[in-house]
Image 1 (cartoon, rainbow, N blue to C red):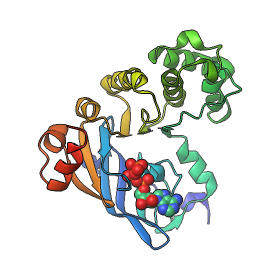
Image 2: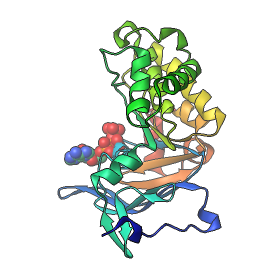
Image 3: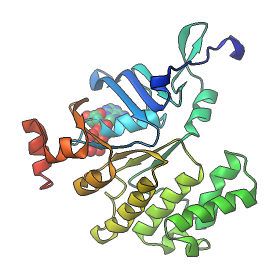
Image 4: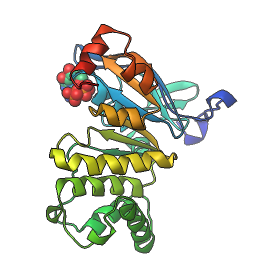
Length: 270
Ligand SMILES: Nc1ncnc2c1ncn2[C@@H]1O[C@H](COP(=O)(O)OP(=O)(O)OP(=O)(O)O)[C@@H](O)[C@H]1O
């Protein structure tokens, strides 16, 4: 089927500023259903915190958006474009690898483990993808990298190697490296969980700064309730594969409605 026969998504005005849309998304691993009938709309620039017990499905939600896990049912869109499907002659077909590669470029993800390339300098870590994936010139990529490394307070470390930096600094480089790609959505999966407690603050500070600038759409999995309170526009409480409660941090964290959420928050003295 030809590319030209694909339909373009036409959004009405009310939907225009929705950048991420999950529709009736189900995810199962074998017979085990881990996410059920998920419907999420995230607006341009919105900051979403995902909280919930271990195994509730938080990571799977963002791994599907990063195109690392395929939904079993339903669709996910970023900026009006379906991730896992293409609409061809009015029918949804599973997208091919070429399509996935293209949409993947619009999403940035930072993991618990910073995954920097150990044999490359900080600068090279930050310029590899913009040069090879986005096709930027070396000079353009370096300029972007310096801007983002300055944002995370590490512009003086460009010639160092990851092993010469602390865990907190490496995580800040990983954040800068993602931002260099100018993604439409940034995903953060417990980015402070692997850090020594004294290094957590500096990474959260960087995330707070990025969030306060307002432009970047962010979805964060966090167990730091004070951080979620400060940064998130909306908080989703995931429980057994569904969004059990959602609302502003005040509604969800300060005034939990259900006993399950109260019990969960009790663990963090939130
Ligand atoms: N590749 C996989 N194969 C089989 N089961 C999986 C796979 N990935 C995740 N799961 C299961 O899916 C469920 C949800 O996992 P997920 O990692 O999304 O939860 P989570 O809320 O992020 O948990 P945590 O806070 O511990 O990271 C869990 O029961 C998990 O064991």
